[in-house]
Image 1: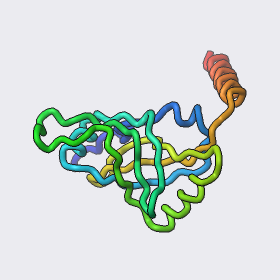
Image 2: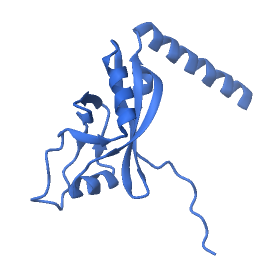
Image 3: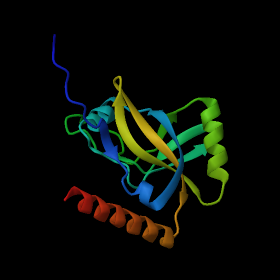
Length: 154
């Protein structure tokens, strides 16, 4: 029998600043409509989701401002790296996201991109923007936990 591979983080890209800048209230998994050369770039990890966000227009969720680098071997089939990409969600999920998006101070941000059974998936987070003092509290709390862990490790 073949040995199992060690578990590894399946994320191809993570938005590490999202949980710092936003208080994430809810997460949703969505598929992404990509072209052939885009999916090859995503599998190679050439995707940046740090500045991305989701808008809901006419019953469609659209991923905006996400950079998928051009595939170097796909000369004529490459598309614009910053083009808007349609997200694949159920109607009820889109309606729920539209309600969240209408609230003031709420943003839908991509948290991570990963492959699931051969398909590219995006984990979306519904986030409420943090104030500056909330961010300072988060940093202070993290530092205190780190100090405690160091003391107990010795």
